[in-house]
Amino acid sequence: MIKISPSVLASDFSSLGAEAKRMEICGADYLHLDVMDGRFVPNITFGAPVIKSIRNKTNLIFDVHLMIDTPLDYIEDFKKSGADIIVFHIESSSDTAATVDKIIACGCKAGISVKPNTPVEEVFPYLEKLDMVLVMTVEPGFGGQSFMYETMDKIKTLRSEIKRRGLSTDIQVDGGINDKTVETAAAAGANVFVAGSAVFGAEDAAKAIDDLRNLAEKAFIG
Image (tube, rainbow, N blue to C red):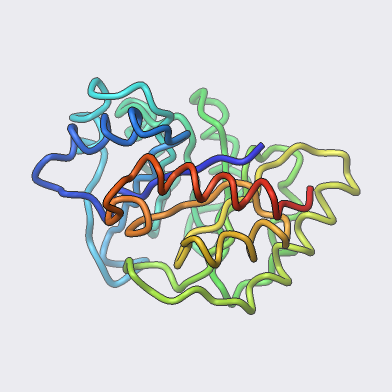
């Protein structure tokens, strides 16, 4: 199933609650919340208190992407803040298996993300426990980067492995997603799309979401 997850990095931070509600009204499936600590990536965004402050503003599923060095230490905090899906980086300092287990124990859906230069095979030992794998199509840390087409082979490899095991794991892509690149990513096997400026910067956000979804549905190779 195709899902669109607008990234709040591209939103108006002075009206974050209203922006979250707007995405719900416009037909988004998830709300993508990028948490950056200034250590794992060279940027700082927000933490659990900000997420908690907007949790009662929308019924959207909170898709929380932890770009932080020690995610295991903060899983409970993000669960309490209202996270529904917690995705962390396999390149982080925390023990991967323990972090996955902690997310599941807290009652959230678990996901692992890989940077563009990380072999996607590194997530294979954990696939049975994962609801989603996030393949970064830009280097994590900043919005507005160009889509890296060379990451498509990783998505194809991952989709093939998911099918081989008979799993229903979602493949999410994040970075440079727009009405051109969404088709490429869907054709490779991705089915969850993080879009920032393509949605929040659109004159008609509802149309932008519908267009992305329709393009992805036509191109998706499941």
